[in-house]
Image 1 (tube, rainbow, N blue to C red):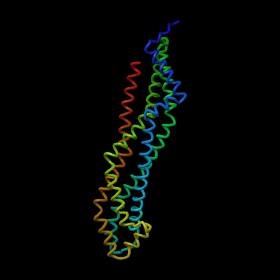
Image 2: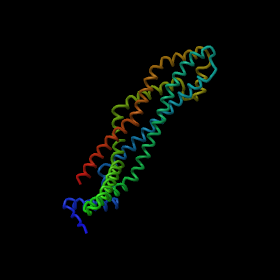
Image 3: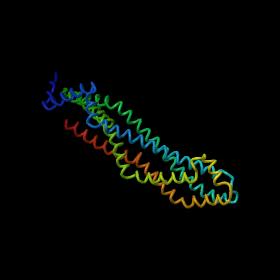
Length: 285
């Protein structure tokens, strides 16, 4: 019968540490320690950032919806015969720009909500994934002393342990750090552009659609009575078209970077680094 290969002293010490880690994780002590070390503060910051971003996106969505509905009313009305072609072209161009921004902000709100749900799911599973990772790593180390006829079993266990370990790191650190890093980049890079765009769009809303009247009634009563009023609306939209385009481009770019580019780039960089480090540790082990 083949002799069992003895476990070196270094690996035996690591094995003891892993077993202690399994016990502490099973009773929830590791979770409390990690929370005290900063994970709880990181989670609280992410929650506050996502909540404020969702509220901001909903406010912007409401502003864009008001502009979109109002422009659709003007475009679809038959008022101002003789000026229909001129004002129709102006309104159609403005409507197209606003519609693109409206869809972008709607998608951003969905992504922000999905990110919140993803972090909540991660907070429920990370503890169990860490426990499974510690168990699989422990079993993998034990099989290193298995008889020579079981190398395939050891390699399979090592691959499983590597996968679960990286997955636990994703749920514990990579996802929260990606969101937190994206929030930091957003405050320094895109926030000024988004605020400028939202302020400009709010000004247009207040100018064309007063709050004391519904969008359709306010628009029709204010602009659709005489030829002069239609001309004023066309002139106003023409003057604001270039600014509207700039604001919408800044809004789209800002939300695109905040919701997708920043967090995804950070996620893949952290994931790549973690995977490389984990592979090197498992190979050296």
